[in-house]
Image (tube, rainbow, N blue to C red; front, side):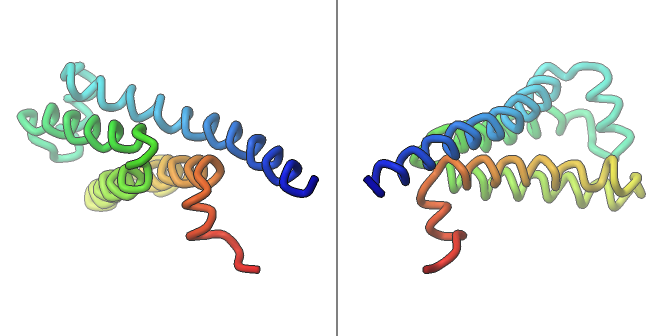
Length: 134
């Protein structure tokens, strides 16, 4: 009986984790697509941050590879680490140019929180690593 309750609770957490992960993934797909297609506003925004135009597509490929790794269940933890590193670079870039703190500098941190929060809720390995010890 107790095992059944634990599995039900995990199923609820897992569903919530998938939902939270989906929000982060959709945003990152949107970002990667804009970079891969070199959409004018993305290229202009990147230029304002000091990113050369020739590097925009490379960043899109890098983000896509990190995202693909995150989407493969066996590699999701590695993908989350890679996405965190990528998003950390975005934070550093915004700090360097003096962007507003809450809206620009910390936005990649919010996305990383969704990446890790969703993964924590849907993956028992992460719950074991970071969860409370009994």
